[in-house]
Amino acid sequence: MVVQARHMAVTANPFALPPLPYPDSGLEPLISARTLQLHHGAHQKGYVDKVNQLVADTAFAQMSLRQIMLATSAKPDHAALFENAAQAWNHDFYWRSLKPKGGGVPPPALKGQIEASFGSVDALKKSIATEAAGLFGSGWVWLVADGPRLRVLPTHDAGNPLVDRHVPLLVIDVWEHAYYLDVQNRRAEYVHGILENLVNWEFAATNASGAPATGLA
Ligand code: FE
Image (tube, rainbow, N blue to C red):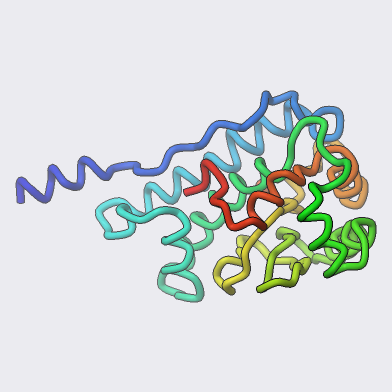
C-alpha cells in the first residue's frame, strides 16, 4: 500500500498547461489579448485541470494526451476523459497553427502538396472558409494529410482527426469562445483574418514532413 501511495503521488496532476508560444497581444488586432487570456488561461486550463482530475489514480496518468485520446475515442465509459484530453491537445495544436505576422505563401514543398490536392492555395483557403461557415455549433476545421492527399475536415465538439488515422497539419478553433469577444458572431471574418494574417504555414509544413511538432504531448 505504501509503495502504491508513493507511486500515485508521483503521477498526481501529470498534465500542465503549456505556455502560449507568443505574448497575449501577439495575435492582435484580429484576436485580442483579452480573448487569448480567457481562451488559454480559462478554457484550455479548464480542460487540462479536468484531465488531471479524471486520470487521478488510473493507468491513464502514465499516458500522453495523444495516447489518452486514442485509448478513449468512441468509448462511452470514457467520454468525458476523451473530450477533455482532446480539447487540451487541440488547443495546444491551435496555438501553434497561428503566429504573429503569419499568412503569406506556404513553404515550397507544402505549397506543391496543396496545389496537387486543391489546385491552388486560394482554393484551399476557400475550402477552409466553406467548412468553417458550414460547421453547425462548436468544433474545429483541420487541414490533414490522408496518405499523400491533403484534405480539409471539420470535427464537432472535441473531435480530433488522429482517431481516424489522419495526420493533422493545421487547425482553426471555431468554438464561439475563440472569436466572440472580438468579432461577435462574424465567424467568417475571424477565419478570413486567420488565413490572411495569422496562419502558420511553417508549422503545417513541419507536420506534413512527418517531423514531430515540438511541444505536443
Ligand atoms: Fe477553444
